[in-house]
Structures are given as C-alpha cells and as structure tokens.
Image 1 (tube, helix red, strand yellow):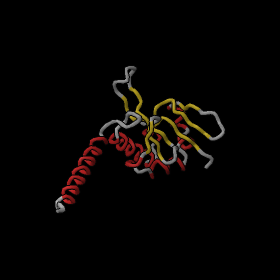
Image 2 (cartoon, rainbow, N blue to C red):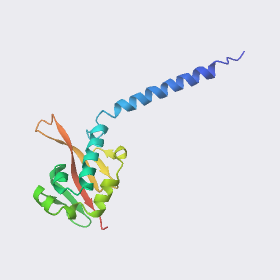
Image 3 (tube, rainbow, N blue to C red):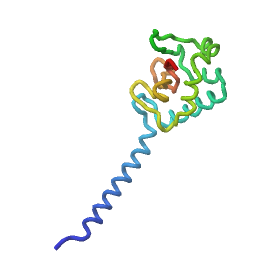
Image 4 (cartoon, rainbow, N blue to C red):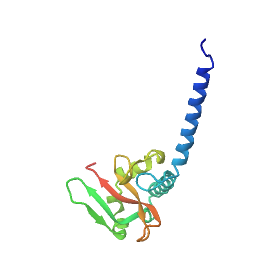
Length: 150
C-alpha cells in the first residue's frame, strides 16, 4: 500500500529547509564578506557616497576616500592623488561617467571579492581600510578609481 502522506511530509521538509536557508542568508548579510566588510556597511557607505556625488560635494566625497587615492587610466601608470589634489581636480577623477555609475549603482548589488566591492564595471572600488596598525577597527572607503577612454 502506497503512503499518501509522503509527498506532504517531503514538501514540509523542503519548506522548512528553505526557511532555514533564508534565515541564514539574512544573518549572513551582517557578517563580513570577502573583503571584510558586511553588506550592511556597504549599503550604508554606498548611500552616503551616492548622496555626496549627486549633490556635487567634492569635500564630502573626499571624506569617504582613502588617500592617497589610486587613479588608473588606460595605457598609463597608476597615479596616486592626495586629498588636496582630489578636491581641486574632482571632476577629472570623478568624471561625468564615474559620477553617473556611482549614482546609478544599486547598493544591494555591489560585486564583492577579496579586493573589495566595485561600482559598475569597476569604475570605483571600495574596501575596508584599517584605522589603526593592529587593524582592530576598519571603515569602508573608496580605494581606487578606474578611468576609461569614455
């Protein structure tokens, strides 16, 4: 005789497994990702950066950057920009294209790897930067800007 309850029990177990996975994913968002930064930290930082870029506030954007900032351009050696130079030449580092990428980025969909998190196709990179030599505290900052021929 065939057990009619088996499919219901199997579905219940599958549903329970899905719920456990969902709860685990929700908890995992608070844990550091591959770059040592949690999803919550990335979302909060992204929103701050987007607001400053959208408002056209170079000094506020500079507060969210790790200096010297690495700026990469096609077919050139990387250059490292100081805070003063960044603020003075903001539009040359955060070009119209870079600004558009930053503002358009969905904070929930930042790509992450061991190097950090990136906006768009790698135009801007973020990472957790140690605040002290023991690295007991870090904060999310912009670490690189990649300029293309656009």
